[in-house]
Length: 322
Length: 289
Image 1 (cartoon, one colour):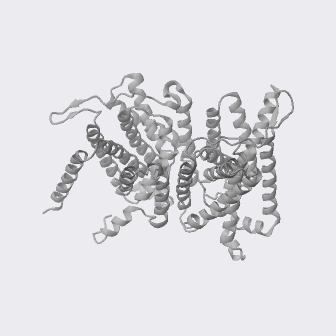
Image 2 (spheres, chains in turn orange, red):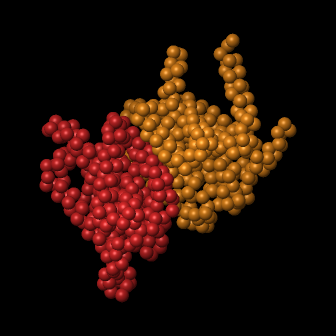
Image 3 (cartoon, chains in turn yellow, brown):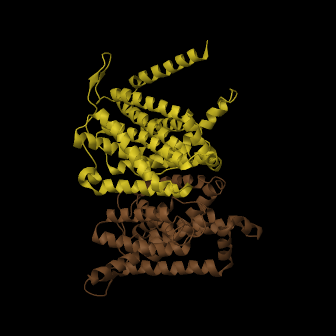
């Protein structure tokens, strides 16, 4: 059989499994599935940012910018939810654009600390200003997605399954876009900026412009993830986007590995499953930070290239793709 | 107005004393190990909990509890050196990531051991030095200031006047060259980790009766320490002390006249400005990161 037909069958099978998946789960597991789907977009966008070699500690706050912006657009301006989600994503990208001017004067550790400071300032502004951000309590009663029907399925967005289908479709589209971006000439230039920035520069590549581009695009997708989350949960507050959440994203990414597109996604799925099945079902919920810390340390010590390196070992005999 | 300024100055002096203990430890570890220790705030927290366990819980004398805090957290530092930083010496981001993992373990341990609620610690002394009607300095705060001055003085003497101190500064400057001169890099790393962590621990232990002790107290401490070491210049001990004093005054003033959150925003903005305008900080020399 030709390769393309095989691929089509494979992807159709994957899609079928993903559509059927929530019906095999309990209600609370369905909710976790929704969060995991949204988190997949967060880690995938984080990977785009790390492609150019800079590690940000402000990514979760950028997610929060999308969430706050989208929530406020619906609440204050009455913009319909799907439109405001896209506007939230654009707001995240714009804020990232503004932040990039000071932040990309820094590199390495300084960028890390600078991004942390910038993110923390934004988060404290939410906390400080009751108007319009709601202060420490945040924003409550965010409009949900309006229900609609497509004939074979009635979308009722208080049902996790419906939201899973909606968010899953959006996230799948975004992942495909991120994948295309990475494989495009622009994406290859991101790699060059990371591994050979002097050479890239002497070949006429505007390194800083490409770093900024990666940061802005990644932030746009992150903002969309934030908006998807905000309209599902219905309430957001500054503490939801603090450093601890950032550490979770960092852990997913590092445990999965950042050399491949699927690495961070694997990390997110593996740790979510571990967290929910092992910790919650067995009653170790309080030990969650402990387990995450231990997993982070063990993986950086013994599996520094992440879970993806295990997969690469398994499929090594195959032809190496460029 | 003068009273208010004098009182703010005293408050700032107290804040500066424990901030500089934390920041100097962080700089020392960074200088010798080349690792940014994100768990430094949690080492501070661990020191405070030693006082909770021994002084508030066990009835031991306060000074003994503080000394135990220094020793215990110093040992935690040695553990980090042995288990995390040494195996990850060749991985530039590895030590930082591992310290984040260690931070979460320490925090979760505190939650499981003591619960998330605030700890009540009986005050060491109720005495207050009253300079005037409105300008007062509680004795317990004076103790912290005196202890910080003594400890930093001792550290200064150790670094500038003893052979170990010379070895330590040499390997902070150029580890390879120091090793060629017969200095044991492993040993200086252990000394630096013990002192650096111990300083954070002793700061936490000293201030435990004066602040709200809870498992998440490390967060604001590490943020403050980062601001101070960036403003002072990463790798500069003198810079860390000067920046601690300057930051404490700015933060206390803004807190007095506006509020704490605004003060945090001002502090972080200062750090961003320094990062943009002069990334080596006020006292920093070479780019080491």
